[in-house]
Length: 264
Ligand code: HEM
Image 1 (cartoon, rainbow, N blue to C red):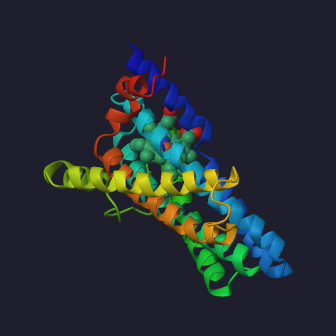
Image 2: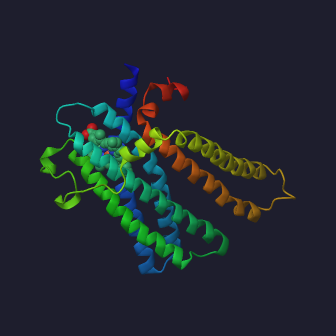
Image 3: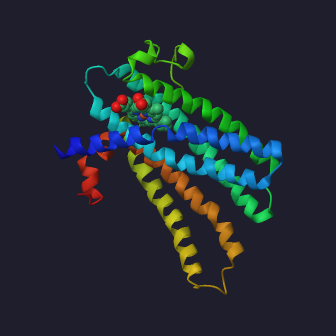
């Protein structure tokens, strides 16, 4: 039963790291607010770095959650409805998280060039971070209801007991869209490889430049201008990769994926 063992491992990972996004976002937002109160750009930089890192750290939380759902399928004491509601809420908060992380990175990127954080962009991060904290707290709250009837009181559908209603984003709708339209998968696959070339191309150029190759033709400030291209590649890959993952999560959390990755 190696497949189950792998999923169980990932399910444990989910339990271990599932509070990182909520606590990390609250920490990042708190530091950002403090930086406004203290008018301290260094603190602002640290808070933006925290928000960016937490956005990245949410990826394994999201992926391991799917494995946890597979492991718990059909088990007594597990609310299948709460799993679906948690999955949809997690997807919405994951998207919010990545948008916030992207804007935090953008402020940091510009800051390196001009020396201070631009006001408009920093306030954008502030608003996004507040919305993301609300979204991720809601996802985490529903997650807790999956196996803790003692705290849910049967109100897993929403934070503070209100009904969630129709979810803003539904993982099932994305799955249907990807699997029922034959053009979606190959299009995403093609874009995924374009994104890969952009990302690894920029990383390769950066590494070669650090080794001293191309010193006379490429200055470090010109290299800095290339970074958004790498980030765009990462964004394209994140979006298209998530389309694959949301459509067929079992393909990536089971044994086949681990064999592909040469995992033993
Ligand atoms: C932003 C991403 C996510 C966050 C922040 C998150 C957070 C949480 C939290 C706080 C819990 C409660 C842990 C506890 O009971 O102590 C939980 C449990 C759980 N989550 Fe997630 N989750 C995320 C994504 C997902 C996804 C995409 C799924 C897929 C359906 C998922 C499936 C589960 C399952 C099945 C449990 C119950 C685990 C157990 O009791 O053994 N999660 N999650």
